[in-house]
Image (cartoon, rainbow, N blue to C red):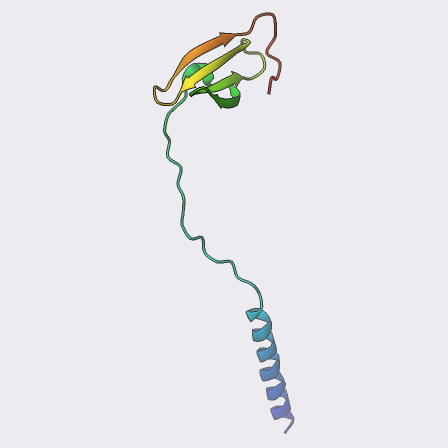
Length: 96
């Protein structure tokens, strides 16, 4: 009879364990996978860019510290720098 009690105890413990495991929230699978498409490769003068803003139809970039004190107006459609603003009398020192 002692074996029956041990067997019943194992069944009950298994049932409790299964109930506990069923309460663990599961993550829903992602609804869709998104991919990034490369649109353009930036021109060489923007290879060290460290900040940007969109203004007046262009994307304006600044480069890292140590580069010339210039801002570049880039056109995505033409994939080129359309305007360059030279800022005189200053040093490009971490403008961002």
